[in-house]
Image 1 (spheres, rainbow, N blue to C red):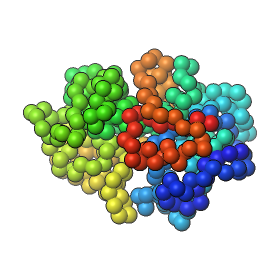
Image 2 (image 1 turned 30 degrees about the vertical axis):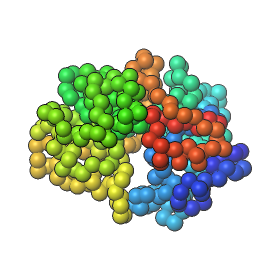
Image 3 (image 1 turned 60 degrees about the vertical axis):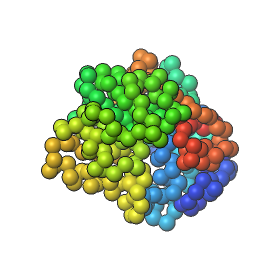
Image 4 (image 1 turned 90 degrees about the vertical axis):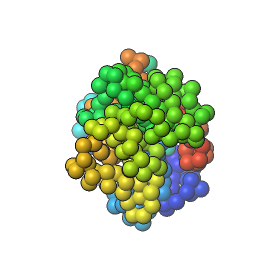
Length: 322
C-alpha cells in the first residue's frame, strides 16, 4: 500500500510517499481503508517530536510509528478477533495509527460510525479538532447562556469547532483571527471578531467568562487581564514556546497558579474518547456543527499540506484525500 512515511524527526521535507506492507489489526483493533485524513497540529507534533517531552511517548530517537497522520475516515476492511462493534464495509471515523495511508489500524474504541450526512472528507476533519473543542468547553468552562466566550485562534481547526459549540450553548462569542478569516468566523456564529493584527484582546471594557486559547502566543498575564475575575481559561495543547516542555510550560504555570487565585486556569491535552466521537456524530447529523474545509490535497501532496498548516493560517481544516 502507499503511505506517507518519516524515518526521523524533522520538517515536512522528510515526509516521503512509499510502498509499504499493509498493517495487520491486533485483536482489539480495526483495519480501516482510509478515504480521507485530517491535518491538524498533532501531525506537526508527531513529525517534529516537539515539545521534546512528547518523545517519551512517540519515540526517543525516531518515531515509533513512521507513518504520519492521526485523523481518519473510511470503510472497515477487517476486524480483530475481539472486536464486536464493527464489521467489514462499515463507514467509520476517528483516530487511526498512521492515517496518511491507504490502510490504517485503529483501536476499536477510538472509532465511531461516520455521520450519515457527512462526506469522508468532512468526517476526517472532525476527530482531533472536534474532540479538543468539545473537551475544552466542558466542566467549569462549559458556557452558560448569555456568558461571554473568547476563542483565540477562531479560524483554525479547534477554533472553528469551539465557536460553533459555544454559540450552540447560548454564549455570546468573540473570535480572534486575522482579517481574511473574519467573515468565516462570523458565519460560524461569532457575534464579534477581533482582528489580532489591529486590536488586543484586552482592549475594550468587557472581560470574558471563558477564554479558549488555541494560539499559544500570548503570555499568561495578558490572558488573565482579559478574563473575568471568576472566569475560566483553557489553554489548548502545547503550541509555541521553547525548551524541553515547549508550549506546555505556559499551561503548566497556569495550572500551578490556579489554586491561589479566583480565576480557573486549565491546560488541555485532548484525550481520544469514543463517547466524544459519538457526541460529534450526533451534533453533525443535527446540523449543529460542520467542519469548514480550507483545502484538500491528494496523498502525494501530504508534505505540502503540512507546510500550509505551518505557514498558511488555514481557514478551517486541511484534508488529505486517499
